[in-house]
Length: 382
Ligand SMILES: Nc1ncnc2c1ncn2[C@@H]1O[C@H](COP(=O)(O)OP(=O)(O)O)[C@@H](O)[C@H]1O
Ligand SMILES: [Mg+2]
Image (cartoon, rainbow, N blue to C red; front, side):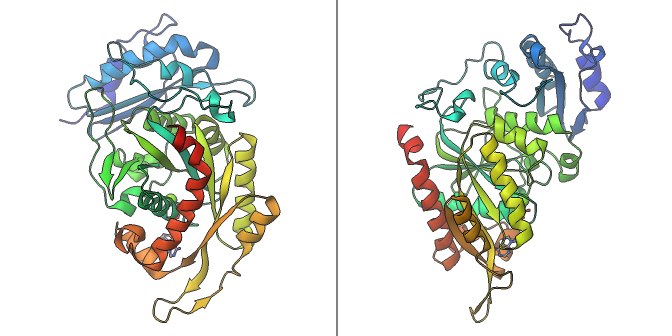
């Protein structure tokens, strides 16, 4: 039985809004995405009203979930702030407390805020997850996703419990990188259970929607979908959650950097000047929202011939290292442009998992070790 938009609308029409009208007449709904039993939409309200709307969001979500044929329903509340980007929108708060009636919030054995008044303290952390880190790039195609998954695997090899969230809602590539095409199941608390693969807990918006659907999502929905992927997923206990961010430094990325409780960011760049300019923008963005930059990785740093192993610096290798030095941020390492990195990525068997004793795995592990060292306090405190 396939669910239609009209069915969703009819259901939402029975939910009352705080404005005294039906939800569908309150002029707050985003476009409704219905595909394959999966329903996504957002309720967009002014930040000042967000609290009053949280229970409406929860009601609407349970009503939609009850439609026969609906397998997943994500309704997000997005609050648009009229002025600037000073503090996080109150909907985060409302959401954190907004569990469905009768469902106890998951108890956290961690302090709700990081000690020492870190800049991230204003964002609710994710229960059970010691450190969330972003893998970011100023533009697409520089190998952000490839690095994110292999870095996650490198951290795993260091004995850490690691998760991977593909938050690149415009072009989720984790299904391709992992070969995962199944849909996450829901637990008793109606949280999505991440898919386990290669010893990682993995979640991607690509598991829920087709890539084409993901492309048409508007700005506020991007943020709300990602917030739900962070909070409505049963991540379990993790030392590090690696987030593959959408590329670029626009508003969506800035909001994301600001709203996700990040302990740090890893910036991926190629050695070329143009990519470095973008990387610099990325650095500036994280600085603006007080997220520490854990360092820069130079991807496609030099070409390594798959046959003879000879190395050639086709992009003028070393640019990112100089840039890191100039900007005073750590340089985390150089990854060669190598056929086997691409081939394993495309085959859904990332190189660190499929060639654990090879030279590339060693490079990713070394980068992982530098990242881990900077997260030691957060991981130890957990
Ligand atoms: N170090 C590398 N060596 C060879 N191919 C790579 C390397 N890094 C990435 N690639 C390939 O480049 C393409 C883009 O990489 P991807 O990780 O999807 O980039 P992004 O996430 O930044 O868009 C993919 O086909 C990937 O397999
Ligand atoms: Mg990608």
